[in-house]
Image (cartoon, rainbow, N blue to C red; front, side, top):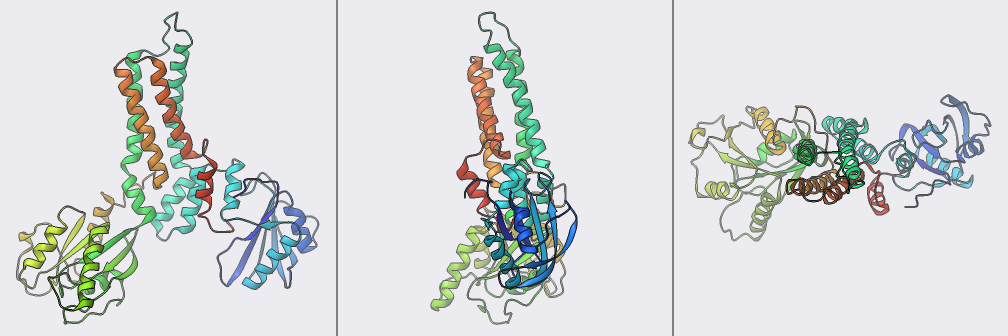
Length: 448
């Protein structure tokens, strides 16, 4: 992606498809000239909506044009947004006319990239724009908006400011080696580094929940045949997606459904009943896929039929999932029980047909995935790029702390602190390679 901002770009800024209104966004030094060419209107008042007749390449419409004068715009450049009727044909016609007037089609994420390059937002906030656009649950939207508001930026800036102060005093001590001046006592260096490390560890403590909120999770429903997996799948999905019969082995393949559980975006996976050898090649493949899905999922819902005695196949599934995140479901709790949940204390009694126990099950799924109650204060960190960089900063500070304990010369401690600061600056984009920017902004939609 070219990083030049000397040209003018244009794109449709609203989602593909028909709608009451569609917006074409033009940004760059020639935005006003493009707008004038499209509308025949010469004078636009900043931040005022102007009724215009817009002429596209092969269609015309009445529209509202709004000029945002630099630097008070989304990109920090002159921006004109034309709100026309939401016909894809009409909007594409307006874009083609803007290109004929001197603009070029924007690359994915280029409007937000220009906002970042002009200092309107840092890299954390730019990534939050994409997260907010892609949010499918209220919790995802809230976490993205918090980052857009600068929650993570401010916390990283406070950590960096503390490191800068310590680094400056170490560097000052290095400037007067012969005089023996110490602008920070060697005994205090380790303590100050520990304070910063604790702040970074506090951020990283919620990284698991943050990843779950941002990326969602896969939850596989596993169990032997006819224990009520598909009935539970339908109950959690809120629709009759899976075929349910009294005949064992109805489900042969993996069936998925996207649902929201306690604010988390979850992909539910219904699987074939897991059991021993079968001569049916299709059923055998279904069982193999069920085993693989359970191994790779973020969470396994292990379903045991409470109305039937526990058998060796139940125990096999319990043993296979014992070392991973799971929730055990005692299904068919509305039928006479063949065993008591006290035999498996962690099992949740659920009657999927009546809905009894489903709310408790949803809470248990979310709590197990997130590592804590999801509805507490949201995490400040949700992005794996940020997690990786904060872990790198923490590793560098751990080396600096060890060097300070050993009373290693101050220049070595200062070098490790400088490495930690470089990682923090890469989080917010103060120091970021071009290929990293390309990777981040290429994931945006065109028009944003």
